Image 1: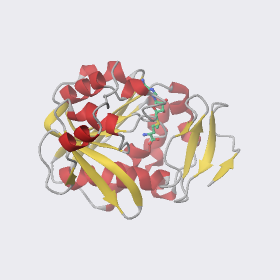
Image 2: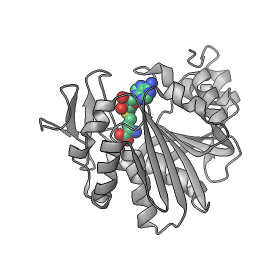
Image 3: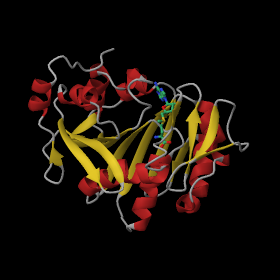
Length: 254
Ligand SMILES: C[S@@+](CC[C@H](N)C(=O)[O-])C[C@H]1O[C@@H](n2cnc3c(N)ncnc32)[C@H](O)[C@@H]1O
């Protein structure tokens, strides 16, 4: 991992080479990297979000995804990469809020991994127009507050990539009330992926009726999959037991 002073972005961001060889960014405002530098930006997107989600949903004809938040766009682009690599024929619609419009404007100059080379036209369209459409794909970026944006949707999403900055850096996107709005925006068999394994996060999901599962693998640290229906392929977290061992734990609230 190293710090790089390239000309990309604003004085608010610096570029960091993560351990899988892909670049991520460091946010001076939030004092955090956009991805785990240890797991790697591309690997984190693929292993903590796209693979577990598509393991469950890839046989659907049409998949609606809420990508919280767009940031550098790795989760959206890794989704396109996975679809191409596996010759999937499903139609995909991705909706992604992002507060930082100047970041989106700058992404045409970002140093993406070679796996994203074939999406250059999409990266350009999203950076300039905030929307991209073709016969099998719709991607739209909403420049504004995710908390407001998610209230527009009802029973819409098959997949939610919950990838805000950490609960301590950006608590507004991890509260009980936030996940209540997320639940309303999701279909009844929708699933949510997140890198957070914090008990407070899992409790905020659990108290909204989500089942909690562990997403684990050799190449990355454990992550969480939450689902409104029951899943067979992931290890279930016994939340009543966790709560009984941590009686004072509370979910974050607005
Ligand atoms: C960890 S980064 C997202 C990383 C992204 N998924 C990626 O693959 O590059 C968190 C992002 O959330 C954005 N953000 C923070 N608060 C927000 C809010 N209330 N609504 C929308 N975006 C927000 C930040 O500007 C930042 O780009």
